[in-house]
Length: 187
Image 1 (cartoon, rainbow, N blue to C red):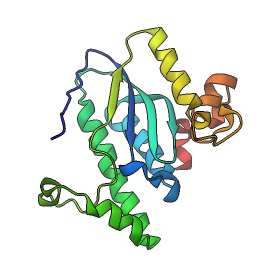
Image 2 (image 1 turned 45 degrees about the horizontal axis):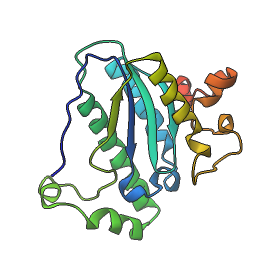
Image 3 (image 1 turned 90 degrees about the vertical axis):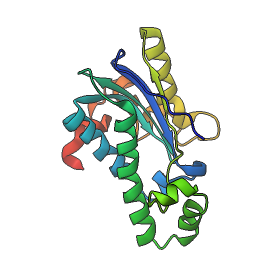
């Protein structure tokens, strides 16, 4: 049984991450970055939450969220975002007739998930959320997020500021056009 953590609102900024089920590169395979950018828009409009930094990897997302108002429920906000994206990803997988992937996403549902009507497991059950409590910790997480596309096995670009689905170029070279959450009009 998964442990559920409640994130309170004594901190206004959080480093958050969540992962596609079994690390399957669903964001890449479904070209699903638009779903994440739409979620960023919902965060801003519905929850008065700013996306301070982000990177959308092929199979996971890292972001730093700033909550301007207290009283938010981070568990609910993240789970609603994951649920919205899951429906859209499944829809695209069906359109692409990706039956092998759909089968993998359906085969490991728990009895509880099946009883709730869930048909596919698109994301891992949990997510990571760490409160940002100091400038040093904020800088550490910014560096981690922005260097993710060139870290370890990834090597998605030669220079981390060139990665399209990241706020790195905004922070490193002031390139506002690459801070995609500001481009809601393009979604």
